[in-house]
Image 1: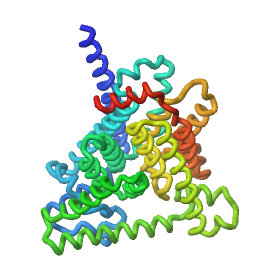
Image 2: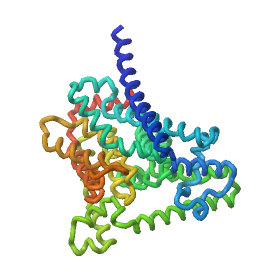
Image 3: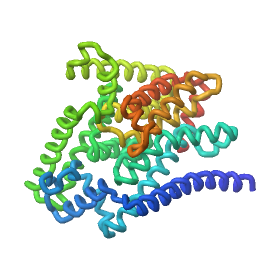
Image 4: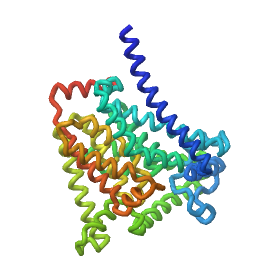
Length: 412
């Protein structure tokens, strides 16, 4: 009977979490429909591109599609073919709840990696549970809502990163295949490739290269040889254009770490764009190497990998000039920080709260406070503060704790 109650309790917690996201999504959709704003502009691009891929048509039509044009790999278009079973009017509702379920799975995976199970979270007292809940929801709520509004793919990217970590010890090739798939949606996986090269995981890098070849050949399902090669080359050209646009974004719209330093540091060297970017990147590399060495020294292998993954999930939006929507992927870092927060560390708690405010209150269509956050570039500053708290969350694990963690990962 006690075992049954325990299982029922665990499932009720999971169900509550799922119902919470469903409720948020339903309220959001109703408000969007009432305001005439339920557009799903980005999902419409994916939907239209999936239809073109299925019929073997050209995916890349900048003159015809204008701003909302397809900029991703040909292989990524095939991911959205199942939604073609429905009209776009119905498919966008399905996609909203699909993203909701993906976000729920991301939370479940983070809980498993940090706590082993939802059951462990009940050990927190009531007040701490409320704080944990708010700290997990508030920083990413605005970005989650924006994902639903535009129908973007950043939640899917986060899930692919987490699944890649999940399969890392179970099947190295499957892990590399999942990570490569994320790169064929958005090429942020380059930072992970550099990480695995640094860690001397050359077999994993080889699997990524092999997976890339597989995804390059996916268009052969509906395109002939010459058309398939042409589509991949057009995608590479789109990547080049994105890099050029990234460098030409005006300072008023850019929200990267580069914009933050150029705004607040008035040294002459920072007026030279290329040189200033190199200095900032070098500083970031020093911080990343220090972080990786600390996790290697104090943490068991699997926990180190999850901490490292969380580090890069914070750095990705920091390095992108227009990476506002990408901040939804900072979720793993929030779980790690909250797991290690202790009421004795008052300064760390204050810094964490400030970072959550700077990140979470940056509503795109918000009022005076949001405008103030944008004007002062407090969003990337909040991410930098979050990195500092994450770094300080690396604590030495005792031998018996390491055994428990290894056993936990084997049981997952």
